[in-house]
Image (cartoon, rainbow, N blue to C red; front, side):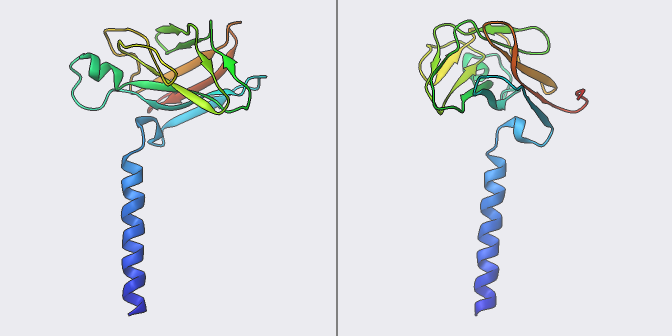
Length: 156
């Protein structure tokens, strides 16, 4: 009986692990490279959802399903005013009056929407993040703070 209970427990744990893997954003597929820069900022790029899931119909809903997370891993708040987030092709989003509290994050969506504490919008009408791309976060002095690369064939 103990042997059967162990098998059932292992099956449940395996199913939970598989479900958790399926729920990860596209950047977590094992083909990404995170290059944190040494700086005085505790700000870094977090998870990325590139290539909007589902049909690419250029609807605002589809565009906003593509995003990059910017995290403040420190205790102190950080103003992102003047910071930029860009891709390999040169698409650049400039942060406005965004203040990240300590241990908080904001998602930068591709489409249109109303900015709030958790989500900001690039107000674009076309996709930005490709299956092989690089997200680069720069501070208001144009210095690279963090960079994340993903996809096959990217250069290290």
